[in-house]
Length: 207
Ligand code: GRF
Image (cartoon, rainbow, N blue to C red; front, top):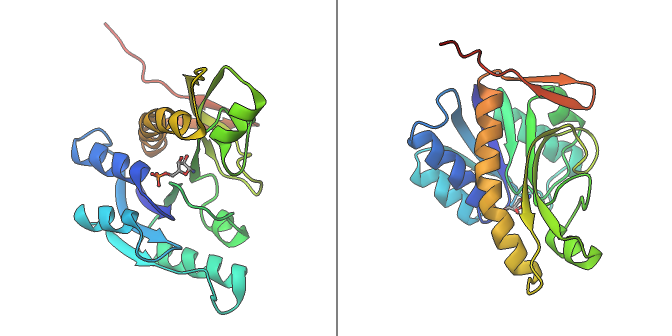
């Protein structure tokens, strides 16, 4: 399956995907394009270092506004031959142009156990709510914010001494593993959507 990855910044989740691919842990996933809505970010350098094509497409001041930018992102992904998308720290809400071009084939990584704490600063939200367990979620993207069917979750304990930064850092380690797992399952055709639930088709083992 040919993937595009949308990013906005640091790129550690992108790095986890590209490293997994290089190490043979994503045998059916190929990364064709990394597109950032913020020029000059580290994620673009990481992509280039792995030999993946990059496109900076700044949303600020884009002629035609949000809809036109979304359409331009879609066109760049389709021109690169992408069939599926990973939102890896893409700090924009996806519009109908992208949702319609990649139906059921867009995944996002979010630093909380959804449906708790969607939106910005999820680790801070978790601390302020006083939960003892948080974590991360990889989910299919729908028209809402962090609201689509859940593919993989990993739990992370909240410690008494945690700050938003320390909790986010421990969650991030789990994000990397969860995202690789979800992309592997999607790329191998092992995910079936049944309403809100995502069922995994596991290989039948014999002997
Ligand atoms: C991650 O915490 C991800 O869950 C959130 O944005 C952050 C991106 O980090 N959506 P990175 O750019 O992958 O390092």
